[in-house]
Amino acid sequence: MSYDFSSGIELVKLCDEEGIKISEAMIRREEEIGDLTRDKIIAEMRLSLRVMRESVKKGLTEKVQSVSRLTGGEAMNLYRYGDLDPFSGAETCHAAAAAMAVVEVNAAMGRLVAAPTAGASGILPGVLLENAKTRGWDDDMLIDGLFCAGAIGMLFARNATISGAEGGCQAETGVGAAMAAAALVELSGGEPMQVLDAAAIAIKNIEGLVCDPVAGLVECPCIKRNAMGAANALISADMALCGITSLIPFDEVVTSMYSVGREIRPEYRETAKGGLAATPTGKLIAAGIKRMNGRRED
Amino acid sequence: MENFSVFDIIGPRMTGPSSSHTAGAVRLGYIARRITGAEISYVKFTLYGSFAETGRGHGTDKALIAGIMGCQPDDPRISSAYKYAREYGIGVDFVYSDEPVDHPNTVRIEVEDVNERKTSIVGRSVGGGNILITEINGMSVEVTGDYPTLIIQHRDMPGVISDVSRVLAQLGVNIAYMKVFRHGRRDADAYMCIESDNPVTPDMQDIIRRLCPAVHDLMVI
Image 1 (tube, one colour):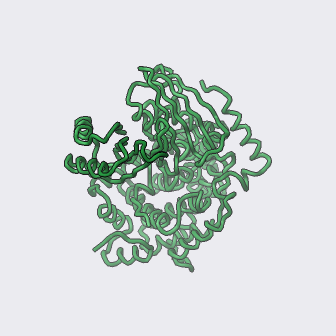
Image 2 (image 1 turned 120 degrees about the horizontal axis):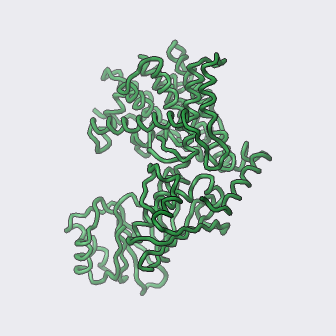
Image 3 (image 1 turned 45 degrees about the vertical axis):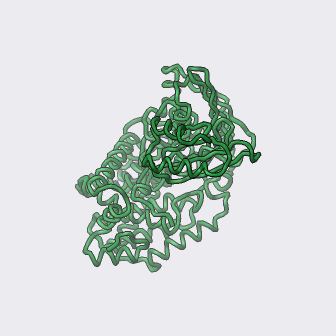
């Protein structure tokens, strides 16, 4: 019996046959392919959960500012505004703010956990930790959620890409949202197939999204796209949990995301040569960043 | 197809903002420290390509210094690396070059240690925090830093490679990757770059020197 699944359909079959959840399948796979024992694998994820929690807290409570001085402090504002009857609802607004917080901390050279990358690192912790507060999920549950998210991310890495340079922003904040949606569905008692549906829906919502970072920095539009990714994850999870399915199966959505990614011109794949980076304002900011080279740091 | 661990997807735990421009830069500095092998007094970093264009905005400069000070990519001290360098009395200079290079994220690290010995290292950050050292003191190499690495300069003649690998086998050192190079003339020295699963201790290095007379020089990273 091998747990080294390589597609969504294999994963669901494995879960059905063994009567296990996706998170459990991913833990068993890790035992099989790696050198770590089950206890070590879970302990390692617990460490990452701790760093995730610290990064959200730092971004929501301290006045962070990015190295470029372009961003920081907005997540905190959005979080407070979330208590004032926001259009998106308090939970969504708070999750979006928490997601932004992590990426603001990232830009300020703080510590975080890539999920699946640094530029998309806010969505998964933002969505999970904010919902944990209102739903009473404990750390053991959250760790399961992370393994479930990891299974979905692994399938994208294996059968498509999780690199903005290769597949655009859909491969980063898109996959981050798919991972978060998947975790929410499993933690809410959804079936493995519903987990895949949620992930597929999240990617379909943003398929083709380009990576056009201003001045090549992981700030604009990355930080706000993590907020949007959180909202995408929440809506996609709700759709799957109420029984809405993805007309195109998960595995086919993965390959279509990859083929779209390969078609995206290099200007729109992290090179900072197109899109927002190529706007007059974007270019002005890039020139300012280059001028920082001449200044000494104190 | 690559077999990803769950910790490749949820992870690494790192200091932001960029795995290539920050985490990779820390590792480049760290490897330069290990290659130098002595206490460092001064470092000059020359940044090329995207490192030169956006390095300051990504904190590449701080990351390189932190690496030179011995930090790993998730060290919280990276953002105050200049301060730490001052406290430890290490001089640092940066040159932002627009000279064309093969790889966009390239840096040349010129180190001076307390014995006034100079070491020059060229490396690149190849994505996801992974790195490649391509040059040490003018010698072309390929070192990833993922494994303990042994670099051997030796006479270019038949049997040296098998001699070295036999000695390593007897010492219980398993070779993970191995590359052999020659620079220019056939009668000049050749090089071996050996990445192993277990480290090659100083005792083992002496044994290699003793048992392989064609080995002229040997360096462990």
